[in-house]
Amino acid sequence: MGFLDVIDLAAGSSGDDYVGPPSPERSGVTYGGQLLAQGVMAAARTVDGGRQLHSLHALFLRAGDVARPTLWRVERVRDGRSFAARSVSGHQEGKEIFRVMASFHVPEEGFAYQPELDIDIGRLPRPEATTTTYVEFCLAHPDVETADWYGQDRPMDIRYIDPPDPAGGPPLDRPQLMWMRLSDELPEDPPVHHAGLAYLADASLIDHVVLPHGYRWHDARLTGASLDHAMWFRQPARADEWLLYDQRVESTAGARGLATGRFYDPEGTLVATCSQEGLMRWSPA
Image (cartoon, rainbow, N blue to C red):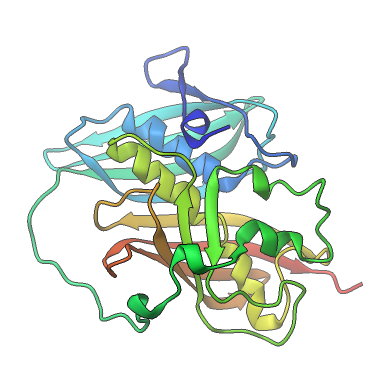
């Protein structure tokens, strides 16, 4: 199942209702990036094509069932001269599982600035020179059953630049750097690439909140789940071309962890930023 199949929404029973296809994954829980991507596409269907998505703020409310389609309901919150806002809710079996607020902006010229990078992208190994994929990293954890793990079914290609030991080890606080792209060649359609970036952003971001404690996200003693996700789109970018994902842990406390991420193109231009908080309940027994 390719990415365009994942975001291929059918018309619902009313003008602003849409139906998203089930997940290609094998586990019983829908991948959060799929909910983000489908929610973005549903919102974009109701917005004038001259406006571009610039931010989203989402809540993961319940676990989604991979075998079921998702009903998307879009509320047209506001249509101004420059901005449009949409509230999108995803439902399965009559229960709301996800909600996202999305804001769209008519492109304008203005000031342009980004901080100087503290990494030299030009000196990093190129994607084709990196040998550890995200799938290989996850499958190397002793608590991951190859036949049951679902991440290998996602239409994405992720390469670790400097992966930690997948089984665990000393606490790590260094940035986690990965090259990422969607596996499919995508059309020249900005909403598709915005949805693609959101799909990619959720793949690994929250995984890293346990690294400062010396553990890995797939540890059977951990109960973890994404709680919310925010994202800002800074510059046009293609989700089917290599992007550097710079991910950092901001804090852990109260059985929750907060991580932030930045997407850069190979020339070092910041194209998107995001943040995500996740549940991290630990059962040492």
